[in-house]
View 1 (tube, rainbow, N blue to C red):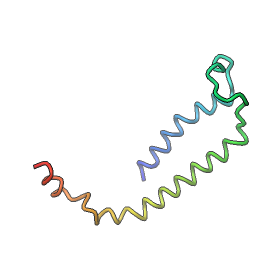
View 2: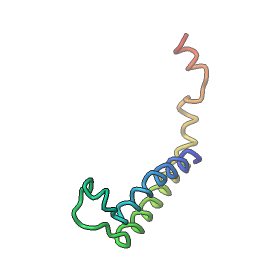
View 3: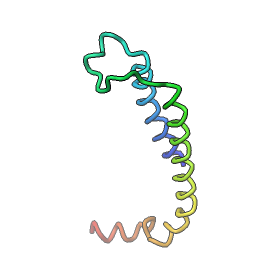
View 4: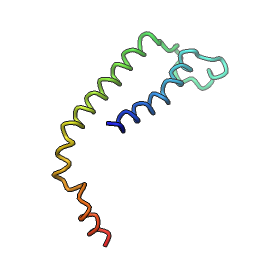
Length: 86
C-alpha cells in the first residue's frame, strides 16, 4: 500500500506543475504548446483528479484481495531462490 501511495504522490508531483503551466499559459512557452485552444482548468482538473482517485481505490482493492494469494505462489520462499542461483 505504501508503494501505491508513493507512486500516486510521485505522479502528482510531476503532473501538477505541468498542469499549472498549461493553465497559466506563459508567453515564453507558447512555442512548445501542442494544442491551440486554452487549457480549461474547471472542465478537466476535477474530473481528472476524480479518475486518479477511483483508479487508485480500485487498484488498492485488488491489491488487498490478491495479496493473500501471493503466499501460495512461493514468491516469498527463500529456498527456491537459493536453488536457482546455486
